[in-house]
Amino acid sequence: MLRKPNIRNRIIIGISLLVSLLMAFILPLIIIQFSKAIDSAELRQLEELNETAITELNASGRLAKALASVVSLTPQFQQAFAQQDREALANATLPIFKVMKEKFGARQFQFHNPPATSFLRVHKPAKFGDDLSSFRHTVVETNSRRQPVMGLERGVAGIGIRGVVPVAFQGQHLGSVEFGLSFGQAFFDRFKATHVVDVALHLPDGSGWKAFGSTLKETRLGTDEQLATAFSGQPQVVQTQLGDAPVAVYLHSVSDYSGKPMGVLEVVMDRSDNLAMVTQMRNTVILVGLAALAIGIAVAWIIGRGITRPIEATTATMTNIADGDGDLTLRLDDRGHDELADLARAFNRFAAKVHNTIGEVTGVARQLDDAAHQLASITGDTKQGMDRQLQETEQAATAMNQMSATVEEVAQNATLAADSAQNADTATDAGKEVVTSVSGSIHRLSSEIDGAVTVIRDLEQETGRIDGVLEVIRNIAEQTNLLALNAAIEAARAGDQGRGFAVVADEVRTLASRTQTSTQEIQQMIEQLQSQSARAVSVMDSSRHTSEQCVALAGSADQALGEISLAVSSITEMNMQIASAANEQSAVSNEINKNVTNINEIVAETGQQTDRAAQAGKDLARLSDNLARLISQFKL
Image (cartoon, rainbow, N blue to C red; front, side, top):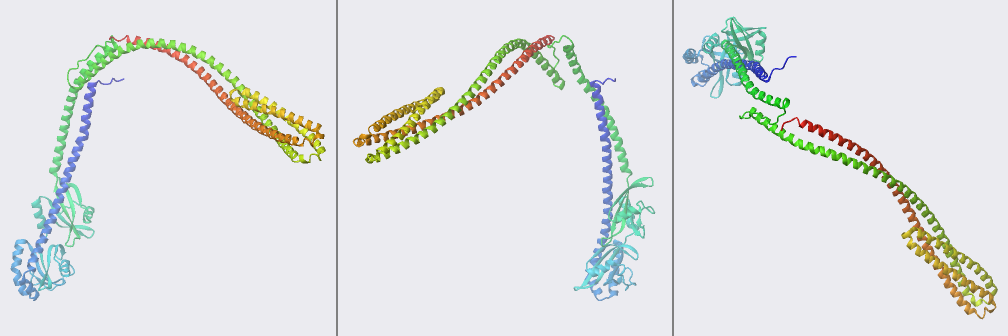
């Protein structure tokens, strides 16, 4: 493979190529711009020459108009024209025409009657009275509009420069007066002599063109197509050859008095001097480019030499550090204020920084080695702790499973207790209805005591039924006592939450005992009432009193049964709350069990990560040893 050139040669080659490319781009651009400037200057010069020719034509027209205006304003001429005195008018104007012909090149001087009848040709006094309206449109327009008209017009004798002015006398329009100046080859020869250019006027002639006047003799440089384009109002510029001479041709339309194009003016200018300037400019630019290339190569060599020397010194120092004994105390010569001195200073700062960094890295490597060994020891201890934690979380998970089962059993028992309390509440309501019935019976007994004598037998029958009712009350009291005992047992199982329920159960049991006692007393009274029915009449008052006591006791029994019903309702509600709480506790226990299981999994995963951390600590210790070995290669 080809070896890449060194920096010095690359700088020389690069600057040389850059200068060459700049010259290759700039020099043609300069030549092109200079050529465009020459062409623009030629175009401006041709346009100015064309404008000059048009201006000279217009100046001749203004002169003809001015001469005609002077005549039209002269009272002597106005009066003779108004009187149609041709002889007087001729005698007065002939001397003037001679002077104007000599001084201003006047060729025509005549008066016209409207619309265009020749009244007096001063330049040809013997010819008059002919109608000019068919071809002298300037005269017709002046008399119809009564405004001055000037410019080129084609007549019988060819093209002339006309100035036609209306003539009036005492406010009455009389006709027009006209001056015609010469316009022919003399105009073109004079223009060439003055401006050192060839000029020609071409008029359309059928399908071709005919030269009206020209300094080119029989030569015509513009083609028929170019002349037609210029005649339509688009100027044409042509660069061609006239013999051995390069020329620039400018074609522009020429308008008549009315502004309509009547021909094409051709201006031909020699451009040999301009081409010589372009050639000289091109040669000069090429020489300057070659000189710039030589100077660029010399400057590139000097710059390359100034750059590569310090770089070579830097390379030698870097090679010594890299391939030698790794001496980081070596420094470059940083004297000076240029970029290379800045590079040397930057290298010295870099070497010093590397020196300090390697020193710090050495200390850090030692600390890293110590930390690696400590990390290995810590990860070992952590692994043991994670193993113990894993065992404990497994035990906790087992305990939570057992607790969840216990909570579910409590919830089931609480539900059963709630059902039993509901049954007790139903039985209490039935007992309350019985007591109410007994109370009514006793009231009826009290109201019929006065007739007890006559209804003793009925009373014995009623006492028999009372025995049955008392037996029911006794049974209810015994069942209530049993239910209260069961409620007290359930309250004891509920612990602190069932203390209030236990108190109520004791009161219910007390009331049941009282009800049972009262029932026994009523039974004794009924037995006495049956045994002493013979003495019913004598002891009626005592019986009435006893019946009133029975009513009171029945009311107490009814009240006790109401309190029992309320207590049983409270027990039912508490059992429902216990069941709901037990269900919630079961759900919480399940969630805790799930969380403990997740913790167990996390602990297991943490143990695996701890194993990886222990391995990373070993790898870190190995890397620390390698780092210390690499640092030992440098001299500090």
